[in-house]
Image (cartoon, rainbow over all chains, first blue to last red; front, side, top):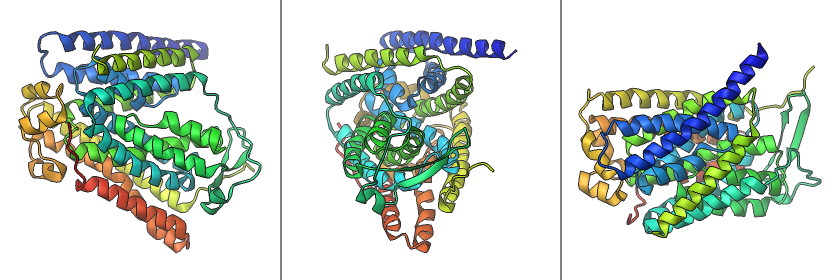
Length: 313
Length: 138
């Protein structure tokens, strides 16, 4: 019985992958052909984002990082509106996940707050920079970043519980320590080190999050885990929660500048959230590693396409 | 007896506000979107025209469709498209609300550094939300 259910869930994951490509191909073709009725786009976008939500969870990446390169690459929307919607997609996902992570101590307010001040201030700067620079320059930078993220996902080896022999003075002054309970019942205490270089890196992460509307989990987790020595579970949980703060500041900039078109933003947000819920259920029983590699491949392709578009080739 | 990791009280309060606010925001977004696309509320920019604008830079959309910047949308909240901003703004404003609850909590615990950090964060978010900062969008 359980085996049949596992098989069904695995099949669902495969169907999600199979559905993604026709949606992309339809969007790509329709974008270049004569006008399509307005209602087609929200429907296609909703289905696409639903599938994207499933895949993002299975691949262990955030929705925003897939949404921006794929939607800007294959749909007819201008990058300004895609970034605005991308930030809202990442924000809604982070807000929905936040309560559970905070209650179970898998996200730490003490770790997130100092980082959030830096990242959210810089995200505002990044958002203004992204809106002021010519589109082709942003597109080229986005392409380069996406290719970099794909490589990072491929080579980055996060550590479950990094060894932190002694906490540094800044980490100690900011009270960056805590504890959580493993599924085995074991109580795990953690603390940070190399806090200053970690905090400085969040300047760059904030600017990039605001400039490209990507969310920044792909960068938050390695910095918290590999550099600052935060256990992987806390790094992932705090990173997700952190997005709810960083993306809020950048999202306001895009919102105030007219970069949010509800007709495309809302199906994207709702579709991706529903897809994430389904993805979590599938993930509970099956974690097909092949999907992660497939997503890395799709990111590489989308990044190169973005570079191609930006260079006007 | 199983091990327990203590969750600070202010963290639980933050989580509770986030939980109810987030789902309320999403519910409002879904309802207002249905009102919008069903045509029950006339939009400010006709649905047929939106597709002409969304493939162009934001500056052309703002100028061509006469889109208000900053909080100018509030005056148009009776229109189907701008009604959708209620849910979006609730989601975008939740973090400020949550941070406001942290300030008295940290002050009460004499956690001066964290109280200061929280106040700075609230100011940053309010500055971003105010619409005071403007850019010459391309």
